[in-house]
Image (cartoon, rainbow, N blue to C red; front, side, top):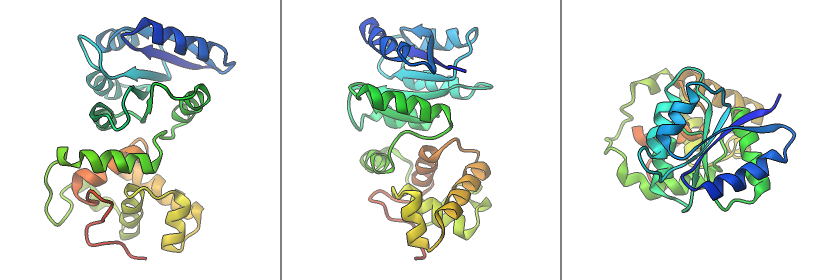
Length: 229
């Protein structure tokens, strides 16, 4: 079954380019297009879509607000933010709004296709190191925190799960976390899955955002109180 994709961008030429790339794939189909966020939200009411490629700077309704509206709906498609500038503040806001990741518009076609497939399968497409750089730069936009995390949902996590969450937020891969905590990679993957379930998060990107917002991890990659090695 093909991955149903919606293209959302106010530049028709860019949509045409993306459509040509996707049309050449046997497992993808462009089922809808929109020139702004408002049109995208409207189209989704009558069209089944799996993945939305979302521009951020558009008239009427920008991609961030459109993403927020889309991701809060029932059976919401996955949203992949496309931005012109690396570390764009709109990309950060898009991740907070529920997007599963972000990529640059000049990404090579192969990487874009891989990202769409990854998002469709439930994975995040922002590399941990990229996520860390993004959040380190825009951490002043986050609420000030005290010495302890203030998000009550974090109390649902075990001590080990909090350790894993800190390391995810610092940009470590599952393999690196396994080495740091002397665990198997499969065990780390299980912990990450439990963190997502307990906190009602969609992917690792949202784990990172929540860790920074609650003060579990601070800008620069430091955890509150450190982590056990």
